[in-house]
Length: 372
Image (cartoon, rainbow, N blue to C red; front, side, top):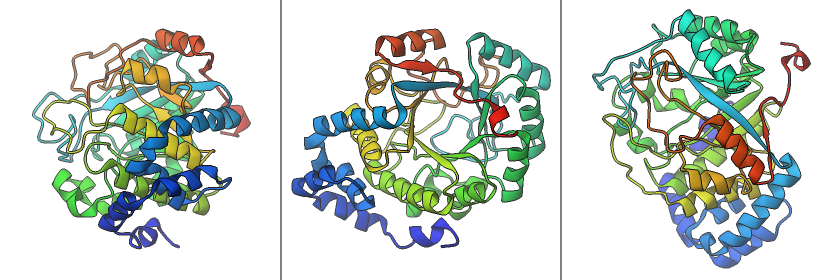
């Protein structure tokens, strides 16, 4: 296969939806009893009927996660660089048609924000921006990474999809991970959510992880925006994507995130409501299917859910997050991408993790060991 597009086109949305609805409880139990599981098993564990076995799935998830990752939770914080964006996305506070004040951090402001993050103990940082190539393009990101490398042991980015050569440039600067979300794999309605801008090109975005893989990036993060379309079908396609990428770019590591649609300025209401028990089932399905997958849970989720998910599959969590550029110190009133739900500080999250019998990890490796 030359790209995921070839795999994607072998599957139809409505056919996957029908398969999910037809799964029987005996098929779910057979999948749970297997030693090695396939995407068909993931589909079974994702199905509506599998919710009957959620307690067993949760216990298996706890055991498998501890076996592979121990009793540790990696902590990180996002650093929003800019809320400038040239896309219209109906669910995002940064959307071009949202007529609010825009902000892009200067070098001085980047350092001020960094000093606050360092005072919180942050060593893993995720750089986030809206999608505006002229204002926050590759030269801006290169400069930001150069400024921040001395301060953080791990730098990840979540920005607009780039070309392969651009990812190589950022990799050379020290970018460790790239996160990119398809938002929804429902191609027929994708354009309705993304009516204007480069993001409206479904296949360019779909091919982005292939470009990241060819660029040699150490880790890729994928996910869908839960609430746009049927979360079960979207999550099957997301797992299909991860399965392809793991086989194609076997030197890279992979993570999955679970952003649920949260309130933001001027956005739509969710089309599909996902309850906490549904999200737990989804996390369990991923872990039971793929023991090596890193599972990240952000501050979009509420305190109660995040308290419980520490021992039920999570390996990575954000904490103390601000989703607006300058939100930590220099411009706390700038336009945010979405409202956070868990507003506890980094220290409070660390204490919660310790009380759960787990270890919060602020730094799990040093760049000296990777040669960058």
